Length: 386
Image 1 (tube, rainbow, N blue to C red):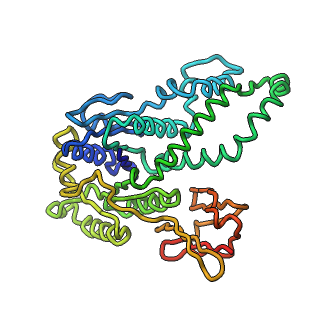
Image 2 (spheres, helix red, strand yellow; image 1 turned 30 degrees about the vertical axis):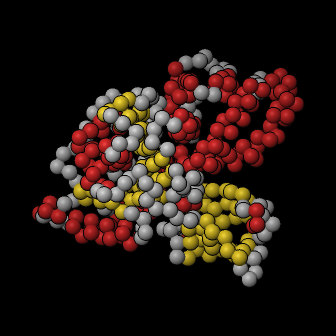
């Protein structure tokens, strides 16, 4: 099964483009499911049909669903949920508000990812199209497996034994329940599932991400930032879609000022994302709604290109032997080096770009080495180890 995720700034038309892609692939004879992970769902509006947490057949070979995180929370991780519920209701009664609060920050993204992994494991479809939330929330979704895995590897090995030792004292003095073995078992299962999910998401032959943008400078900047962050977490971006381009005949009178803005933005995208396929979609005369319109739009965007294919692959991390030591090169275009920081602690390094941070274990050959210097040039962070 191929998995293609669409992301971009809010309002650029991710949902329409994702739905149109699904229509084109389904029309070519493949069985396709398009899902929305955005809690402010609009996928159903695109198809002009009411969608739920279960796949609904739109036409032959095409299915759609909107992931309901509260419902998914009800159906999964019973022991973890029960434990959190106990903590939250120690001094109050259970209520509807408590149920909603139990979908704590980040857990919505986690549940959406787990649902994607479940769909992949079932193997009922040839292609899974994911309509993601706006960029910030999408980054939360995509970095969650990496962060959760790091947290579990650092904290989890010592906590079960420790919990058994302190259980009587904590419960007697602080009146706070300590997790049971069943809860720990659920956490271990969750960790195992997220570990599998992480390996799946980094499989560049299976998963790729496409960024949707519009020909406006602010939105293009956001697309570049997203591209840099996605590379930091080793995800493969294999396409850029420029949506809402004003047709040339419309750029007269009131809209004439947009001609240069639009031209400069499109040229910037073509120059900046060299090698990566760039697709263009002009503003349509009708709303991008209902199957027939979306099917037409899919043909306009991709033409003779098969959107099911992996359209581009980039090697994000490379290690080169030097006369003295090794060079770890990380491909991260569009980064302002004033916002870039790097630190090393043992066999682990942490890279931060503004408010995004990733900590990861170094490859085996670098684990006994120390950073001597680092330079960011021509879109690459080069880290020298000796």
